[in-house]
Length: 306
Image (cartoon, rainbow, N blue to C red; front, side, top):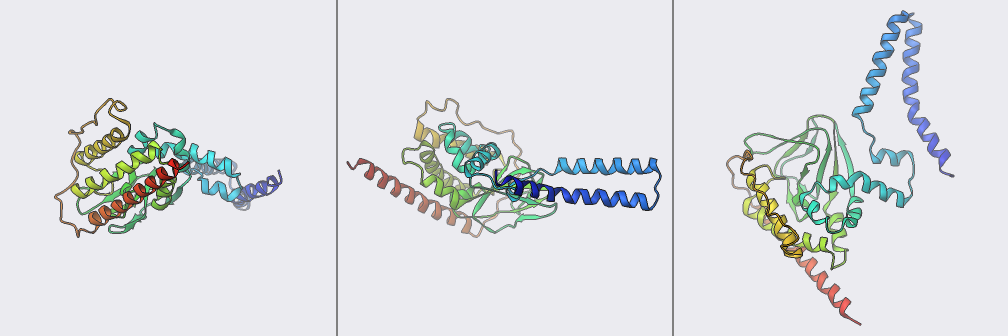
């Protein structure tokens, strides 16, 4: 209750800007003796513009945090409601989290919200990536010298997923077309949550196997920052299927991975890269796998002790 007066004061301060604009417009109309009929039309246009702006701008969790202090437990529940849908739009997590949806809660807490104005470069080609991002609003364009045409990136798309599993360099440039918002998940925070799960966690075991298979697929086919053609989509579904079956058995997944032979191939003629992206990714994921295996062995050893 003690925080309520402070929160109310902050809310009043946010409305002060709107009140000031309306006062300025009212003063202008009065001082210049604008006719009543014209003034009514001006007010109508003003309110329509304000309503349109309010519809285009969705308040973010960061803005809510700036105006009030939420209890930690309430903030965790809020993060789950806000971000779980986006978390499950990453294909491997959509499959793996079916086993234990409660494990999604901790992953939702590591998201960070970002926003960008039109024509803003989100990341350049060749940049070392320490995070993956999920688009939540607006339209972006992904361009790469290895693509025949630029690719539109829409809400729900994950970009640079590979950065979650190992070291990665951006293979193209991502630019906003309109006002955009996206969620960022840092590799270090993501991997810390996975590693700190129980060694018996199905999610941890599936992601460990998926990391191994994903690294092989990326190195073999020289993927971009996200799947853009039929070959990559097929490959991603196949390794998700194989990772889940390796941990849970073939009975858990009744349907084999779908094939998308009708997808239009957007990739151009592949050019030889400098070798750093694929090789660095393979080395990093191998090291990550070794760390997970060692910790699993240590966990089993401690669990077996009386």
